[in-house]
Length: 404
Image (tube, rainbow, N blue to C red):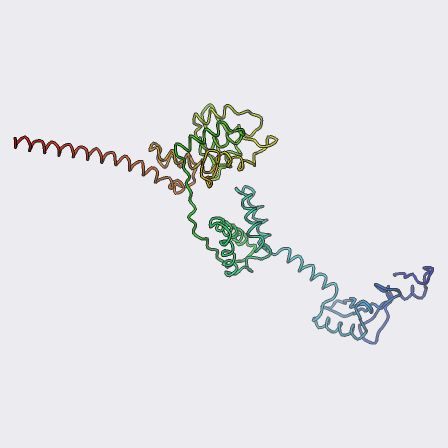
């Protein structure tokens, strides 16, 4: 029973107390009211209830308040009739429906939700920072709240066109590839359905940087006098070993075998751990480094280094290298190009040194080796040409002798 304070002194009205919580009949069967405190005003108001049976069970539910909802006996009766016919829901049913709808919305396999699940399922995902940036900058603003089933071909076409207007072809392709991965993950795990097909644009983005002997000498000179020797050593490591940037930055002392002369690449980009030889230049440089951290090239506080790009670009600029030369990846290419153009390293060996997963990735350097072979063939051709020229000269001299 609910007690309602009345009067200026806050005393209790006994008649009101008796009526609170008590069913009061109306002129309609199955409809009654109770007197309750008025919401938003002084005094009381009627709260109308309906009683009926559903599936053999008695149901009692409030259908509305006199002042708050503008409810009357007639309206309450009409509401009851609709509920009996199953055309209206009780307040409890409404609350449960809204709760269910909210839960369904929360469980919708949106691109945003699939992205989070994808990351949880791939804790070892390499390049996660790049993927996060790509998703946040390009995919999320367009598709975060959509499910794969809600994405149509026209949406993909518009997405591709808009990206192509402001981004490089490779960046556009990367964004489309990531979106395709997210959707495929959802489909593979029965989290969603999708009939959309995302075709990636063909991108000719293979850049094979090389350094001329003059550029190499200039760079080594700059590295030798650089004030930031920490970054200079990272660049030397890339040039001496051809290691990837990520492999260098996470390299630990325990990964170096000075006795056997090998560098152990733990969990490289290719996915399979490998050993690469430590040449004398790399060995001598590594032996000069202080062991103040578990990382060979540590950042602040001895943690894994993150910042290096700005300093590396300055060193490349000081050496007069092209503006678009990529400081570390370019040095990896320069390393590979030097080996390929030497004529002393076959492509299979080069593939192993670069830890390329497939031979096709190493094939970009094949033309350099072909040039060496061509020069060799040209030498042989020149020798034959010289020999033929000498033989012709002998014939001419013999004719002159006969005439004499």
